[in-house]
Image (tube, rainbow, N blue to C red):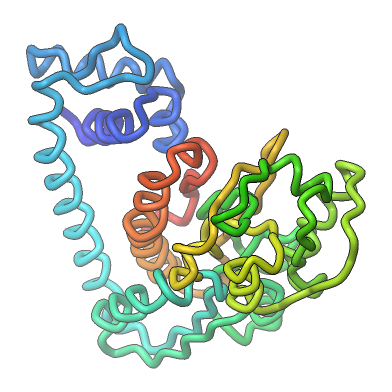
Length: 321
């Protein structure tokens, strides 16, 4: 029984797909399948009903799963604590995190880092992505989290974190489908994100690519103001699951719809100024992934199963510690 096989088992149980588990563990599908078969051979029982798609746990697999999850979580926590011991003398961390995480992720991240880095002086900023990128380029921060831009970043190391797909957010009482909104056939105006935001320009580029020319009436930098208007039935918008999560107070009045046609999205990325401690970056990466999985991905996929293949952590390639 090895850790890779156990991790593949957990991911396959979560998604019902060996290929998805393989992507998330940076393995080939054949290697992931081999690990599963070896684990079942070692156990002497079938953990999945391999005749069904998506894969479903057997009774034995359902008993085994919570124990494996608990063991892996304990090992991950132990690794984080060991890493924290190595970097406990870190003296400074200037961190800027995209606004999208300010309600669900950033508070817990700050508390965890404060505990793990007891001798560190913190500067914890919340900024839109374009400001995070500017700050890291100017070396005014050490680590940043923001949307990956369409241009290269000199003297900045960057590591993929989260695939955040674009979706439609509409008034909950509306009976129109997503295509009707994109065709401007609902009588409700399209509420835009500001062109000053990377997300706003990403959305406009996609609309132009689809040859959609929606009337220009409203443009917002504030996610809460924009989704508040949608909740009031005053319009609709294109946003992402992370921005939807920020507007929890409006969830009873708004609904998510898949974006029609080919999926498009943005990648949230972890940035580090060259020369800063890769040990600290690894600690932040580990903490962020755990928080994103438990506070964002799992609850949203539970309520919106169609997000399963779209809203996901990206394979990490951060420095070895």
